[in-house]
Image: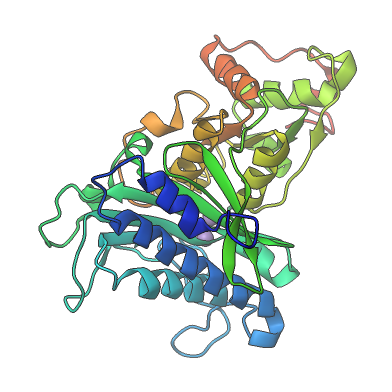
Length: 364
Ligand code: AHG
Ligand code: MN
Ligand code: MN
């Protein structure tokens, strides 16, 4: 055991690699580069207003309105900086054939001056970025896939459209009261805490598991009028508590940083829903399949939890486009399965409640 009494991320990765004697070390080097990007982002986040890092990313004409990404969302300064850190720190090592990010419309091609490798990196450089200006936890999410070919050619969008089952690794960093890195390389889930003095991620949470049952759920209830009936039924039953069909009281949380909700669920169980809804016909869900739903889904499944669209397992979904959005439900296995059952059952008629009659105050 090292002097510090804990294994570092590097030591953990070396141990994992010993399961594959033929491995070249490229993969470990890539994960360490990603960890370095996360440390750089953690530092920028920690400096906040002192680093002049709050607010919107200035448009080229200098206006404060901010730039807009391919999703039509205003970019924060830290969204753009975090994307730059991911790109600059991982592009040179020779491990990547290409990358894709929430903040880049098209696949990023590794510049000709660097060698190209056999992996693809897909990431959300800063998740929950609406929380930056109010000093609430944010994070980064990443997924590692194999490049379909490693012959040095440019990567196309189609090269990235692989179902979540094909992920080689996935992880997230959480910039909260402490900075943590949580990863899976397909052999369980491990959590590391950044030692700010050593600048090292130390293994503090080996073998994370999600309890199968929970009494805590997370959903943005302001969207309830757009929910589909199975989601409405699930939430109504939770809200009904002890005297309702579930026979127990539930607690609710909403941080608006999915990465922070995922972390809470890994620590103590729970269920998270950002389901498909009817809010905007052009957006079948809020969160993105390739760099939000799949990596978090892989981690959940590796921790004994479950991730789903509500209808089918998330990791089996064949992606259709780089920035595709999808309904997402994840967390404690028995709750996610219950939500899937509600979607599979023939839709029941809404119970007749006078509060919800046509002219009632509570009509939704
Ligand atoms: P991002 O900051 O990468 O765009 O993602 C934000 C996501 C997710 O983290 C969070 O759960 C959700 O958006 C919050 O949505 P609401 O604004 O509807 O609460
Ligand atoms: Mn996000
Ligand atoms: Mn983001």
